[in-house]
Image (tube, rainbow, N blue to C red; front, side, top):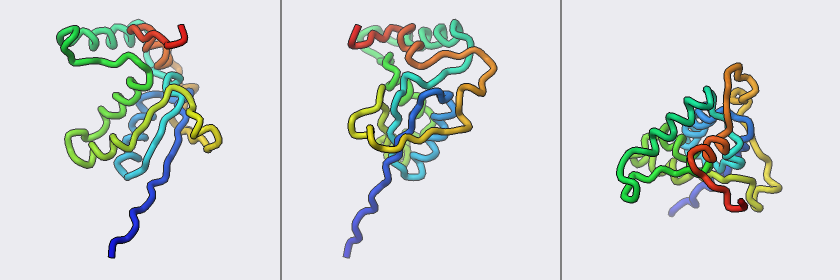
Length: 150
């Protein structure tokens, strides 16, 4: 007789003030272990480095390929965070594909997570940085993201 499928616990991580790379590696590892993870406040995550070099590198990445035929590079902060995590997963293998499907990223806190406890990653806090840094939202605006309300 078939046993009922185990319900995967949903983990909600608040990206506010977290270093993008450290958060992404931690999330990728947990996704590969089978957890379902939602990241909220994606545009408030931090990218370390000098503003000009970060923006220059991101714009160079946008220029690859044909303008209308691709490859398409997303400019929204939640898509930037999702793409960063995808780069840390073995996405061409079945376990990496399944792990990537268990990831959801949001710009702000959705209604269904308002009453849920938000986790953070203490060792990935951006306040420990002694170098210049910028948020993913600022980076997205620099490379052409236009917010819906403006």
